[in-house]
Length: 366
Image 1 (cartoon, rainbow, N blue to C red):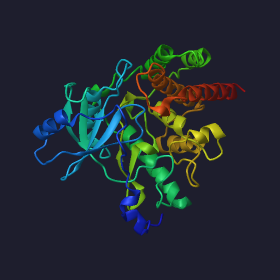
Image 2: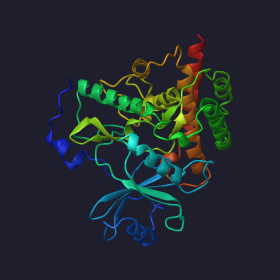
Image 3: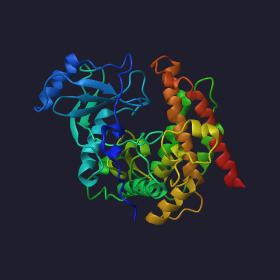
Image 4: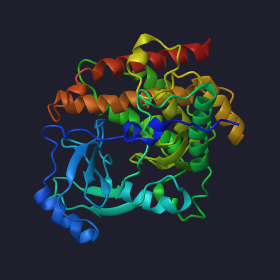
């Protein structure tokens, strides 16, 4: 059994995830927002102190600190958006419906589609206070190998628990179309990549054609998160092996669980991966005790009973999908729809991901 973590530093505020300064051009208009929030919640007073979380590659996320409590606000970014992307209403309703059957979802508090308030539709939810394992664990959180293994298993088990939710009994059939998901995803991400292509990235025709030709005959349908990473988990502050929340449900739907694993593996950087992968790592999957990608697949298939002879399709899909997401972000930067300097060199990452796709395809053909 994993030993409990005993450390005074874990009980301090030093390891609790905190937002930073609001980026220039992404400020909230409190003169409109604050009065509206007070019509929705009677237990807040004064004006909030506003901070912004640093990710910001997709939806913008803010922490509103009132004297009584902290709130999290999510809104769409400015600029041209892909059809169906950044749908705050859908994200709000999905989590609201899922909360009763999946306890890791934060409580939803308010939603508005009135863009006059802050320039975009948005929603507000409870703040889950804890540790978020980003590129590295916060200073002061030290896990030994056994504890890291325990965290890794807990993370995968929380995803498996989501995949095993009986969405029909929970009346959640409206979350997605279900059957035909795999083909829709390949067609959809192919279209999105092609529309977002800029002069400095590959056509990706080789990868897109291979995915279309290798869609598995069998698919399983369940609730999928589609952005399941360690930096979308909230860990208990005094025991960071225990997960108290799963965040960022923008892409969740009724889909195939093996494709959900493929999505997660695209972000999963093993300790022995190449320098480019290490340089783009955004979660602590390199730690001693973390599973490798191969071990993630083995663990998931063993726990769920799914039979897959070759996981290459799902891995390549995950990498290509991430390339398309990255390219959509770069497209916004390239066309001056955002000035976030973190996006300036994402085009290079797109090259790298497509190279990884080709490498996996060629390896599977040997």
